[in-house]
Length: 152
Image (cartoon, one colour):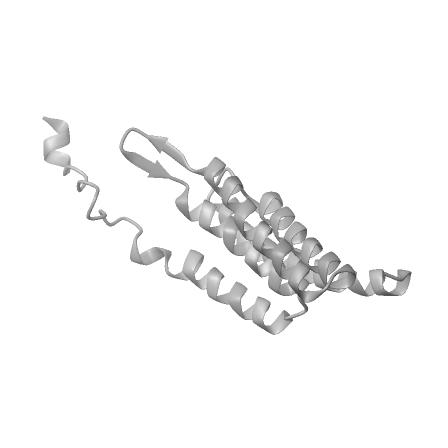
């Protein structure tokens, strides 16, 4: 890649960094173990792989590298998931890490509208739809005991 092409390649990296940061902010505000910086690095790294692959290799090789990012990010996500007894925590954070890796790949491919739209949808899922589950007992979790039982 020429120096000019490398400088142009920084644009999709910057887009991926910004979009991954939007998702990372939610995780940061929720005090997740993988917050803003982690999400930004995952998105940036994914975009970097895609930009490099598109610049140096044919489409088949780029597709194989993207597939390896998709597989590899699963290991990072698995490391975030915490199990305490019969409860599993941080699944949403693991999913958001996988998601920003995909956004990074899409931005790295130069598909900025698609990456931006997907990020907006992801932000809606994480932030605006949170109220659907906040404070409600899930079917697999017992409801919180009411105050009278707790005081006895």
